[in-house]
Image (cartoon, rainbow, N blue to C red):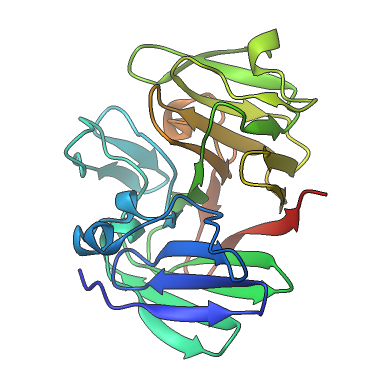
Length: 289
């Protein structure tokens, strides 16, 4: 993968894209202060040529892990292999492991595109825009294969974390997980994960999908003096808080983990040739008064 970058700027924030590294956002910072709004990536992270070292990347044509070596479609089984060193299961689709093409680029906006044949034919696009301190991402997939396939989408942003970072993102239920981070059952949200009101992030390892989300969230960074207001049309988010790390992930996704093998395939969309599925995320930077 290439580490070549391009840049967007709206006078309040600036953004660095790495299209050749999985169509990822490398950095998003405040112009006046240099404050990082996503987990910061240095030159070494860029040269590692994996979006997992950068600020945010797209999940196409599914999010998170899939068990059983693949999944069933109307016209047959799609076999999959593990695609990441730290996961025995296929994870996060295939778009994050391919170079994206720059179709359009202006001072405040870029359109990236990927024509993929892996694990089947699809075209993914990201329209990424800055406007008055707001980052807006529109992610879309178009199914190109002749046989219909189940699709899902997601975005995987990494945010800075301190002991005082707070999150507000209400949800109706949460998927409990086993030790492999695979869902076992839906339950009521316990108090330590109840983010209907702002609270600090859980101190213990968390990697769970929350459902019944209204698509609005707020991340407060009092140590750095700002907040981010998040808006997405998705009803599910995945919260990943690894212990002892200076980051966490809040991922708007269209479906829970391993939805391909859950009853009813919740959140997945069966696409035929030339049909589309999309996801959006907006993040508004606001200084704390």
